[in-house]
Image (cartoon, rainbow, N blue to C red):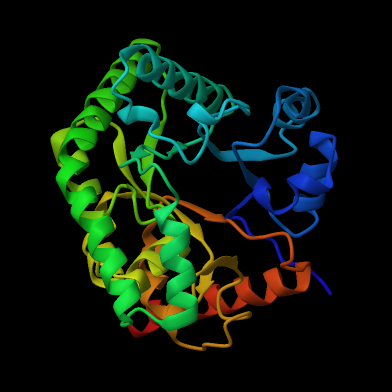
Length: 319
C-alpha cells in the first residue's frame, strides 16, 4: 500500500514508542507513513532525544508539539494523571511549573508550535473513574448503580473544582510569564482529559482561557477524550467543543468506541458519520495530531486519514 504525504498533519510517538529503544528508528517508522512532523509525547526519554535531535537539526523531521512533562519524568507526581498544576503544596506546584517551562524550552528549541498540557484533577482517594467505567460497560449509564456513583463523583468534583481551577490558572500565568521572559514562542494547549475527575471540562477550559486573556493559552481538544466524557455525561461534547473552535490551538485526532479510545476514526468504529461532528474543528485547528494506539495498522491509519481529508474537502466545496 502506498502512503500519501500528510503535510498539514502530525503524528504522535505514542503509537510506536513501546516498539523502539532508539528515537531515530521510532521517527523513521512514523516518516514511512507519510508524516513529516511528529508530536513528541511524554514517554520520550533523554536517551531517545540523543538520536532524534540530529534528525531535527538536519531538517529530516519537524516537531509540531511536545507533550508535558517532557522529556519523560518517572515521578508519578508529575505524570499525566496527577494534580500537577493544582497542587496545594507550593513546593510540588513550583516543581510542576518548572517542568512545564522546561517542556516549553524544548518545544521552542525544536521549532514546535505548542505544548500539550494536562493541567490537573480533582483528586479522589480511589479510582472512581475506573469503577464508573466498569459499571457503564456492564449496566449502562442509566443504571441506578451508575447514577448513584456518578452523583457522588460530581458532588465532590463540583465542590472542589474552583479551588483547583484557581491554582491551575495561577500556575499557567506563572508559566507564561517565565516563557515570555525567556523568549519562547510557543502556545500552551490545556487538554480535554479521559477521566471524569480530571480537569478541564470544556466549561473549565473556557474559564481558564478567559481568565488569562492575552496569554498564549488555549484549548488542546482531544477528540476521543471529549467523546468519552460526553458519553459518560460530564459535558455536551459536540456542541461545547464546536462553540470553542476559535480557542483551539491543537487537536488530538482519534475516535472512541464505547469508552475505549485512540482508535482510527471511521475505520474501527464502522460509523460513517458520527465523527463528522469534529471535522470543522480539525480543519481549523492550527496543529493537527493523530494520537493512535499501537494496534492501529499503517493501512488503518492511511484509510482513516484519506476519509478525513476527503470529507473535509467535500465540506469546503459545499461551503
